[in-house]
Image (spheres, rainbow, N blue to C red):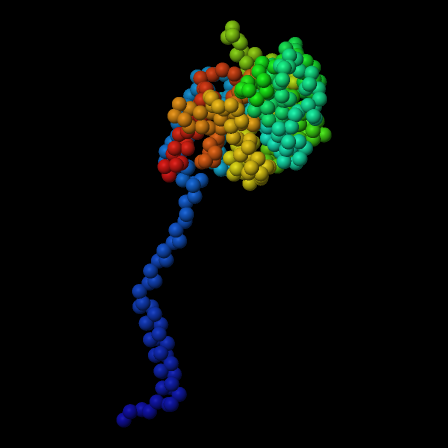
Length: 405
């Protein structure tokens, strides 16, 4: 005879069975398939770090290291900027041989005539602000320029555009003894003293004729029109907005530890570090046309502004295009406002500028379509590396590599 279960026991047994069944059923289910990761888009900036693009940079880097080692002189610092990003930068050799300080991407060098590019950019910024028009006669704001020597008959007044495009017709250097020497604080006086010693070699607007003194006069004319010192204007309207904290005209104590020593090779084979060091105090009138100090990182920021990719917009797109378009008569490579337009044998045009002072060389170049730029500095005047040609060749190779990505 079967024993009768209490009614509550049957209910408990059914609950336990139900719990066992549910747990056993779900534990036997096959595992969920792994989730498919969301595809990550590879940006152009990441792409250029690989393949032919990176290979070209690696070859360039190896060649610079080899050249500096064979020169056995000083240092080279260089960088590649794509858009607003420096994707490669390095230094080679000694920034200071005596103190055994190696060069790097933060080493400070003199830019020489790359300063003209900064002056032209400032000029166009002042045009935007309404201080003057690009085709205004300079004498309207800087009447001393009327004292130029040997003005041709029927010559039209020299304009801001003429000075910034090297089409003023003025000679390269003034015939004034000591014009390119003396303290930086007296650069304006040197300009004024140089004017009667500066003559024409062609009519304004007639042809391209490179003039250092012309750009010196341009800097002083901008200052007169704006009513502020030239160097302060560059600081306020170019260096500060672009975050160029290591670019300047006057060498102060804070920058000395980062400054490369300049080495000038004499024809007799000796090396002179004294004269380049002396010129840190000033090079006479050569401020708007040759006074800027900078670094790889800072000059790359300037290049980004000129390719239109900088996060800081210091002028309108219309102004940027006006600066970079050809301003000189047809024939040859051409010049914009403060920038060379270099055309090679294949017809490829790159934009940039070079510079050279005692003990220092520098060059920058960029491509407007790909937004790629290359900058380079050296603290000795002659060596195995042709700075301008080497970075133009690299730029051309990088542009082709990026297009093929």
